[in-house]
Image (cartoon, rainbow, N blue to C red; front, side, top):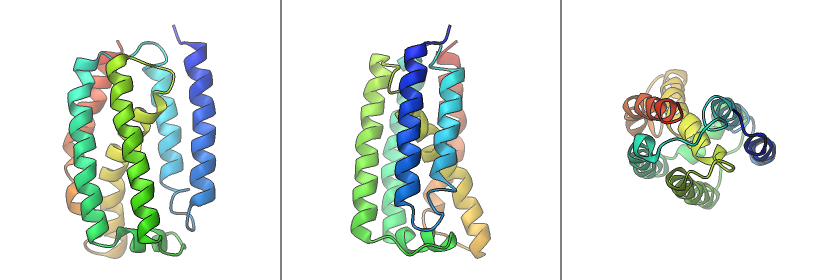
Length: 180
């Protein structure tokens, strides 16, 4: 049975996240990448944690590896100028390096809190770790390959994003099995 409280809180969080990404997007960069990630995370929530919190042992180890990978991914993106090239793909101006760093550090803070939510089985704000799974892991795997195709070669963050092709199915399987 789905929890009305979990769905209500997730709906509010999704609206706030979409508004923030929409407002702070340089061009269409976050609107065409992060906003669909929020929608997918919300859908995933409806089919999984709205019914039951995942069993931590089924998802938490892979989730923590993915968060650690995300930090390496950020390092590759920062060192190779992702913050300059990403928004330009979508008609925007480059992000300031400090904006890029602050945004990512705040996100990683939330994703670490997401690990605590998973461990404690706190379902109400579970949209945060689910967004990390849908966009931080799956989205990065897919979009960095697409970006490389769009530019006809290497795109900042491509190398570390390839590891998400391994982590994404592990996380989804753990989430699915952990909520059944």
